Length: 77
Image 1 (cartoon, rainbow, N blue to C red):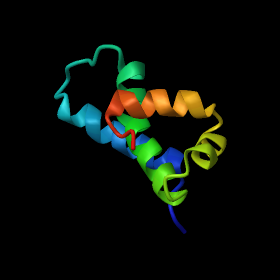
Image 2 (image 1 turned 45 degrees about the horizontal axis):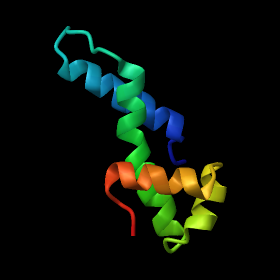
Image 3 (image 1 turned 135 degrees about the horizontal axis):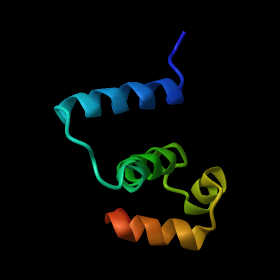
Image 4 (image 1 turned 135 degrees about the vertical axis):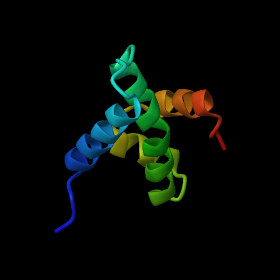
């Protein structure tokens, strides 16, 4: 059975903590969200053949918000 997204994120976080070698990260919540958002947008857009209206629906955001996030990451068509 495939791992859930939750399990994959947990494993990734554990691996990340290991790379810190005992140091503590700053603003981890913001870091995780920023690292996850771009690949999330890219994956959903690819699944929707870059139909922004459909991608925004799937993501639960307005098309304008999606376009703003795409601009943030330089992925605006």
